[in-house]
Image (cartoon, each protein chain N blue to C red):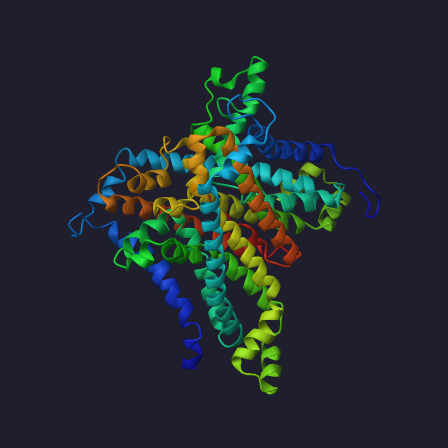
Length: 269
Length: 278
């Protein structure tokens, strides 16, 4: 083929893309059709299932619970990681490979292993921490979010000149606090936001740890509905998919392709 | 200089407290008996039934979905990236893969129940055509079913991981091969695949780990009736099993060992393949 000439899509490429599209769209369409069936009649089309879910006080409670947990996890992760990554880029570049290596450990210690260890190690901690989702769960979720937020922030910091920015800011008399909040943060905002949306997607979908530690989060609620009401389960599953879509689109929008590709592989399976 | 290290102390403290201590606890707990004494009995226990089957099932499911997901993901990614395919399709595919790779767990399990479950839309459709898969030994709530569902996050993950490597295959190489008289088949056999091999292997290893660690999807699908290692561990905490929690820790240690092996293969492969990625 000569460069520059327009070519049509290869037939085999078209077939593979169509097959892929079918495999990925059919379950979503099936879920949509399921969610539109009448709860008693099993016939299309009614929005009753959505009504059942939206009117369920448990739904609102679980959704709010997971959302608040997401915000807490995002806040705590950023508070710990932003200064750390900044400091490492500025003063301790030798530590970068160490932290990058640490960021791979959560892949070797998956949620099912982590929760077993946490339930054991943290048992002696007071009830206000151990028995509360904003204590126990957030502590675990920060670990789940750590690799994704770290890689995102690391890419963000690599794209700016930390030394020059810091020196310029300090030679103008700024304190460390001013430098961090008024100079560094605005420059890595996109990376921090990208990490935050990933964390949102992770926490809103995390089932393993919440279920084993017996907390009522949104995914635990979805599982409960799955076992009890078939058609509303389709409705709530689609809502969950919508939340993932929103978080990932927001991520793409703030990242505009600049965030590390590995950072897109979040998710709790 | 020592003062500079204080800056990273909060991070390391957190990592020790909530990652290393629990991971260490699993390692140590796996060698404890219920009285707190040292024992190898738990480790020995995971080589007995039903636990050894759980490991076999988990490894089989992970192996199958890594290979099939890897192959399909590569073919789809290549179809979207190769010359002639409109660029917009590639953008749509990577965006969608980003979402699909994250759409897992309980809602994914249900999406497939609505599709291929006993009263699923596709099952009904096939039933109307006289081809009810449930009459032919198929059931979604089996190992095969789990594999079909896992592919839903394995294929997009493969697409995301392998796309940059495919981008690294320069058009000039293909043109040079063609000018020298190579057929497309010869190009792939002698140039394309050897260059992509470390990336492909690395991606498949990553997919293996991804599937091996999965809990929520299998739980949502089968409610735990298919024995996989994560499901078996979960039983110790959610079920009525009142037995030795140190056995769960031994199982978790087994998972840790398999995943650590996976990482030990993945990291060097990743290093080799990054040479070719622009």
